[in-house]
Image (cartoon, rainbow, N blue to C red; front, top):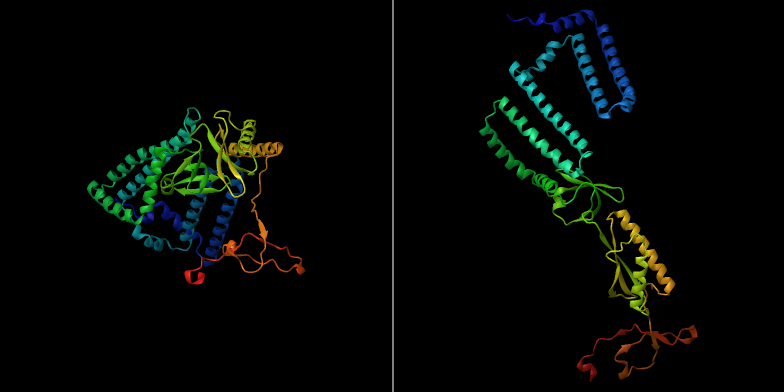
Length: 403
C-alpha cells in the first residue's frame, strides 16, 4: 500500500509553513529574515574559525565551515520554496534528474567506495610519513610508496564500481582503447610528462633535497610529482620544471657524491714566473679551512690571454652544498689574492700595448712596404712627430700599377 505524498512528513512541514506565511508581506518578511540568518551564520562561522584553527587542524576547520554553510543554504532554500508555494515547480525542474531507488543506492555506494579509497590513501600517506621518522626512508622513497599504494588501492575499488553498475568489461576495454587513442593524440605532451614522472620516481636520478642542475635551472629539489619537479633556486624562486624537460636534458646531481671539485681562474702578469705563481697559489689554497686536504689542490696553466697568463685553481670540498661551495670560493679568492700581493705578483688589468715609430714625410720608399702612416699634425698645435703603429695597410698593387 503506497503512501500519499501529502501524508509524508516533509509535506506536512511545507503545509505548516504555507499556513504560517499566508500573506505577501509575511513572505517578504520571511525572505528578509532568511537572508539575515544566512549572513549571521556565515559571519559567526568565519569569526570563530580563526580561533578554532589555533587549536585544531586548519583543513579540518575549513571543511566543517564549508559543510555548515552548505547545509544552512539548503535549509534556507527549502524554507523559501515552501514560503512562496513553489515546491511543485522545483520538483518539476528536477524531473530530468529523477532516478530510481536502485540507481540512487548504487550512486550512494559508489560515492562511499571512492571516498573510502581517498581516505585509505590519505591514511597510508600519513602512516608512511610517520614511519619515515622511525626508519631510514628518504622523502623520495615516501613519494614512490605513496603513488604505488594509490594505484594498488584504486584498482580494486574501480573494479568494484564497474561490477556494481554492470558495465561489460569488453565494452569497457573497447571504450578505453578508443579513448586512449583520442587522448594520446590530444594530450601527447601530458602523457609524455606522466611517463617521464614515473621514470624519475623509479629510476631515482635525484631525490627530494638534492642539489641539481637541469638545463639552465639550478637549485634544491623540493617536490617530485608525476607531472613536474619543483626546484627552489638559490634566489628563493620556486620553479616547476615539467618532467618531460627533466628527462630530455642533462641532469647534474651535485649531491650524489661525497666531494666536489671547484675551479677558479686567475691571471698573472707576463713578467711573472709562472711556476712561482702556481706554487704560491697552491700554498694559499692549502691554508684555507674550507678546502679539502685530499685530493690536494693544484694549479693548471690554462692559456695565454691578451693581458695575462691564466692559471686555473682546482680544489675540492667534502660537503657538496651550495653554501659550502660559496664559502670555499670566497676563501680561496681572498687567500690567493693576499698571497700574490705579499709576493709582489701582479694580477694585471685588461690592457693593450701601443708602440710608436717616427713619422716619415714625403713619398714612401721601398722600405715602407706600402704602409700609409697617419699624419701627426703640425708642431704649431703641440702634436708629437710620432704616429701610432696601428696603421692601415694598402692592398697589394697589381702589375700595371707597379710598372
